[in-house]
Image (cartoon, rainbow, N blue to C red):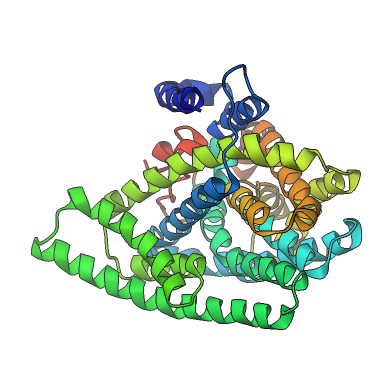
Length: 421
């Protein structure tokens, strides 16, 4: 195990040295570390990566908490006002429709999937990950307005999908126990407590940090570590009072960001830390989730994966953008660039830990197959489709000047650094 851990650390360092070079040949960090995970999961002589499920769950939970918090906290609602209608359409209409369509498809297509399990599949595969289309996200020929639309949607939809995933997992667990309704009702109460508690904590922490920085009580050198601790505090303390930690972390991030509690350079510390753990999650995806999934892969799961990346995503996007003023070409472009990535993987790892083996075998293959297909399909089409769409759209930024949210750093090579320019 020491040799495997040393190899992982070495590859992380080597990737940091050549990330820009790898981006030129369309090799992203997710693809590279999934391949590494597959090799280590099967064992390479003395090297073998076989972590316990408990350890995997801890890593997945911490990563999800940091990703939910930072994606929400770095939003500037003031800068989003000009396109608030488009964001509302995608997140308030398109996302619920995507979850609903995915749930219906899972119920009708996947054998042995209960209603709660179908909801889990639909919700776990609804969030998008802009990092898998990193070359598109930093391509200047794509109008900045459209890149920002895709990026903001990706940054928020995992937080909005999390309550559905939590409820679905609770429902599947309840169906296997004798206290089903009580378990599901308890999950709803946890979500409500997490929502209220996260709001109060985020607003209070944002005001305190802003005041401390303004008065010179705090230094920015340590403020980043403090915000990192705050995100985990939202999770752990919400659980301690009977709330849902994931919802609390996401809502606390939204409240913290709306209070302008910290400058972007302070939030970047949390972003970079989350990016490091994200790479490790991709590694575990290849080492743990993919082998566990493909032992039970069916043709129905493969068909669902293909439909999830096309009709289940693109039809809700098209319906939600009717009357938005966007042309058909743009609607299709936004609909296609809905890659499934980090959030879906973490939801899959959580299901692998929390669900009984019989239930996990029905849903994990679908999640793993969809993400793998997305890594391949969106990785191959990101650059050519971006160039084609950019030329058709007239090239260059459209609309008011904007500053894109950073695509998750290491997950997209150097895309995060370029997006911040």
